[in-house]
Image: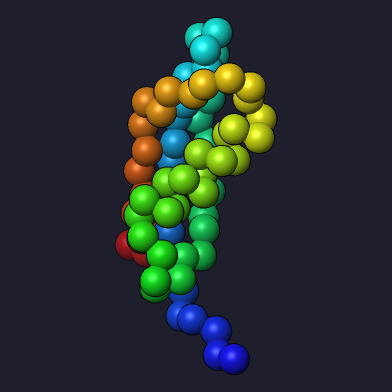
Length: 68
């Protein structure tokens, strides 16, 4: 089996919890060519859900190639 080519992307997300807390994180993720922006969004949001209970409101999300 051959591996799919990937590209490095930098993401930033800010969420607000039900009790009003704000949290912003960012990281680099290697994304296979077949993965959509929506799939990366949900991947990132799941990381926040592992930390915070209850509903989260996404205030900001950005995904850009990690290349200048």
